[in-house]
Image 1 (cartoon, rainbow, N blue to C red):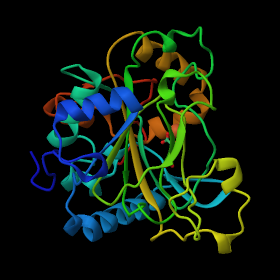
Image 2: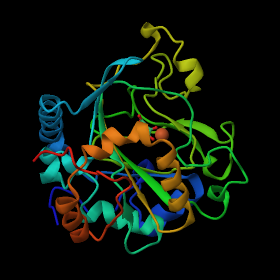
Image 3: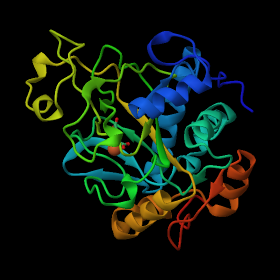
Image 4: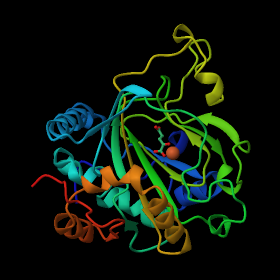
Length: 301
Ligand SMILES: O=C(O)CCC(=O)C(=O)O
Ligand SMILES: [Fe+2]
């Protein structure tokens, strides 16, 4: 659909590989990096579009601030509501990305419910999982391969510098925060990171100046003095989006959203109006499910 996206062929650690290999790594490790979905020549234009989207949202009162993270702008609404990202198919809604999402989920038509966002600045860190029944081994979430995937696009390089994603490899099969080797994902601009929502992970990784390839526990990272830490390459812009396969895991996730309704409502109210979102998603082969009444009612007119 959009020539700005390359067809994904390359993935972790620079070897070129097939979609089957991408799926195999995702099943084994709980995450996979697909390299070079966007060419480096798009970097400046895409960052500029994201910042233009931020300023447009600010003018409409659609930017949230959290006292604990004064340097972070959280854009309310979903990525489809950021019209400035339309030329990039709102990052995750074009053929090249959807081809991977369909393969990872093993369904012809992934479900989207407005869970996508973009953050500006350095935000929270700490190991967590994103699924509904996180540490409860008896929860439905822990039966069978998990049916929800989160995609992350970091609009700067994190292969040597701070600010990237930290994960525990293979921890998507363990209902705890202690299993799995810790790694800092060496994403570069244009790469997409896909992870199973059961995977233990932490954002805003800090790399040591003296040993940038040694991945630290997030509890230790937060206590490091600034002089010991590699800087971030530029103001961090990070976009995330979740898709699911129809099934019990998706149903439990919807129950979870209902329980945390107050936290998510501002995002959903500012999301792209369904009369515009549904045809757009339909063309990409994605099914839509509105998670709350009033979804999209504060989108731009
Ligand atoms: O900030 C990040 O890199 C990760 C954020 C996160 O935990 C998430 O999107 O689920
Ligand atoms: Fe997370």
